[in-house]
Image 1 (spheres, rainbow, N blue to C red):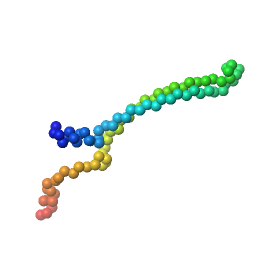
Image 2 (cartoon, helix red, strand yellow):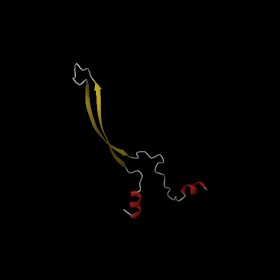
Image 3 (cartoon, rainbow, N blue to C red):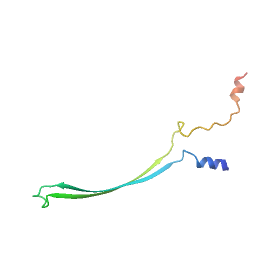
Image 4 (cartoon, helix red, strand yellow):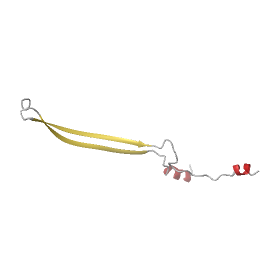
Length: 83
């Protein structure tokens, strides 16, 4: 692999992008409850949660998203149509 090829691979925008995130929460909820069923007249609930997330973004179809690099042509079409 030449040095030019390595630099193109490093800056390629079609490489997968990975993002990791997490959401965590804690909540204490108190609900009224009939006092003939519960002596205190309410119930309390502690809610804890952790939600991890992993997302991968990858360019599957390129509709001009990466840009285009035009290579110099040898004008074979111009030679054919000039006759």
